[in-house]
Image 1 (cartoon, rainbow, N blue to C red):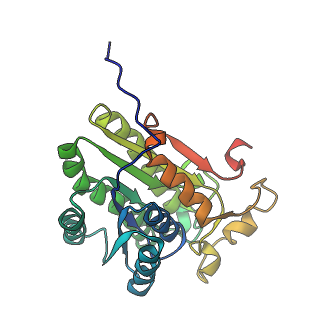
Image 2 (cartoon, rainbow, N blue to C red):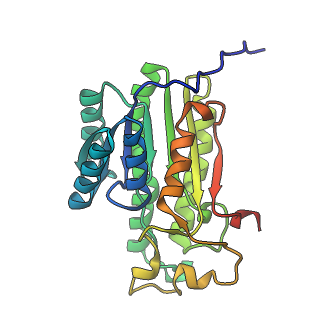
Length: 262
């Protein structure tokens, strides 16, 4: 039988080093600002240089120490640079928030060309894996770490997106569960949120080449409840990364106003 462990003191906390991807807008920006408001050190990463610099400006104003990193996180050299910079500036990586993602065109399988498939899988599944793989040695060395992923309702069901996005987000769900099992007992937890419809700007509404109707219109009458905010999703991310969730590992947390329960 495993020996009992002491319960964490959730009333006190130390400042942490946090990487947040997709931090130029939406859920990523909201998460970066929420961590910064707690005084955490945040490295905000995104392809959008102007957007991520604005996030850093706001995070610094909120009370945290924040740095910007711009680049394609599906490229190993970019990932290595982001992790090395975080370790050099902040002393390690305590929390990784794999949030960056893109939507597909709501394409059914026969409408999905190689370019769409590869682009969505590269951003939504391959990049989070590469970054996770890069931070794990640092977390293992420290004996602690928290991995939080932004999944999707599309990772829980088959009718919330097109073929590529659905496959990618189901892949994230499986990756989170595997990480939780492989690294439990080594001080590392892995969890994910599964956002329902959220006002972030990632939706297919802005895609003039979308095959299907917009996500929101296609879900009318599907009991989705109200549309969530990026701040509500970020609050769940921050909680999963906190000591208050120290016994939560391998969890898929729907943040969706009950849509997943319908």
